[in-house]
Length: 141
Image (cartoon, rainbow, N blue to C red; front, side):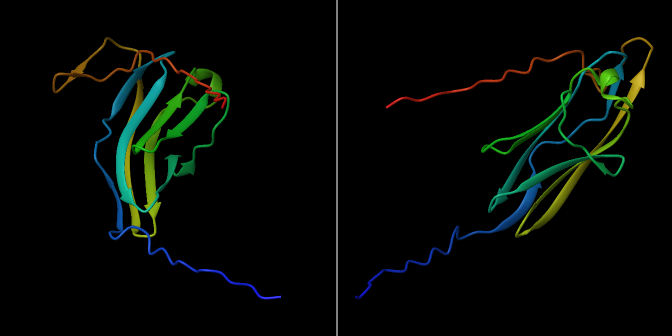
């Protein structure tokens, strides 16, 4: 019995580079009963692992906490009904992106406000509400 095979070694992408953030996070001041949505865009090669931390503790998905990362490099943390998640949402949030080339972080401060809506540099710094869509696709031959 003889076996023959062809071994092809794939060197992968020619260029490897550590993650870099293409969009910045802005500090946010939320009113009571307001959902939190943090979004940034990441570029990296090869693939990147993304983790979110609040006050140094890893944020874990739950019924009110959703983390997303897509092929286009969009990294999103959504906290729906923050009062119902226990502990609120105030704190320092850090997004950590890492791959074989290295690691990069970006942070944002989230605070609560009971006062009137304020403006900072012309931008609305309150996050009022957002819609999460869950789409399931099935393909048939």
